[in-house]
Length: 552
Image 1 (cartoon, one colour):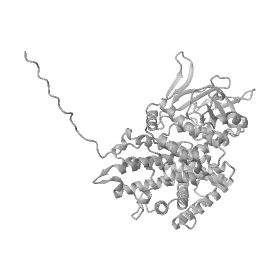
Image 2: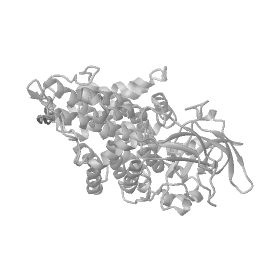
Image 3: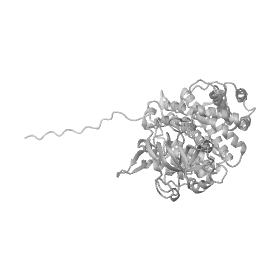
Image 4: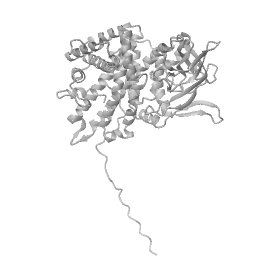
């Protein structure tokens, strides 16, 4: 019998060789960014630069970026009962989420700035927050709320004395336990309800005082993020009106407070962060601030989370820009690198200009917050108005800027592996969180009417650049005329807040940015020498100078 013929081995078919693709944007220092570092130094936190570089290397590491991807792919899971049928109302997270939280809390991005007596502490924290935004935004929601809760909690000194040292620590200790037995705490906020949304005065959650000085809440909140946090500020109707209350997940005696999580929200983005609908039923709470003054109390927290929305959107724009520039520097088309193609240079330079204006304004607000909390009345007045202006405009610009940056990558940018779809899904969030565009535009009007010192502070800030650029001077004259017209104020509110943001950004860039950046901004954003899309800067723009300011 003849043995069967052994088939000859064939060489593996090589169908293609991968060329003309950029390497992964990893293993770099994200803090190696002139715009960020100049702003941090200018606003008083130059002493923190070395730490920013350390954190920036972590943010740019392959390991941290893998955690960010895993935290979004493996979403939080709600566990309402244990296997015996006991109600537990817990949310389970992937280990990558805990790794991100540990790093950000350890870097002082939660409440640590409130315990740091150095001038510029809040600016230092803002710089780190922007870097963390470049990594993953979902885990920053509980970080941001923990930062923001401190000034509101201080309206009740006894509660602040108990909890502030733990809220301002740098230890991330997950799990539901007696708050004072932990080394670090996280805070959240429960304001909105399904029947009212932004109109929190329509809330139906009730509060009844008890003989021991505590209160009992009953009601249902509509959008409460980070339900595994330790403490929450909650609005409820008491006999004197809408009031603010502190609700711990675990009571001082170690028993679970009633905090029934009905479901987790199925959100567009921010997937690593659990957002929930909690139900209160005889839930134990402590009054924060004066009874009937709940909005005034909790607005201290909202103001700080609005600042983080500006920082987060500025960071999101900068992250998208970095990805677009990195791609363009490694991708060749029609015989030349994309970054050397004239039209692509226009697009990237325009995005860079938008990013620098956003980051400069965000860090100016952080500087104002730092000085306001140290007793500077002028900075407090400026912050009151400028936060509403910045929150409106920078958050509005993030979705369009991220979309343009994604398009720079072409089909690669539409693929989940690039990370750009996650940035795109995240982009609308800050425009909604802590007040939508209309809310902030109307808040600007209220500040102008009720706090005229805020307009004076804005005037002083803008006029610090008076005479330096005729286009800026003309835009400021036009804005002053708009601000002086009381008729149809609400109809014009978006036009006015947009113009105020651009004039404020123009003043900051004229004073602090290179001449080429300031000139391009005044020409395109204030004098109108630009189209409606990115990449429409006029011929003669110094594209090379603008591209030198990109973060990679």
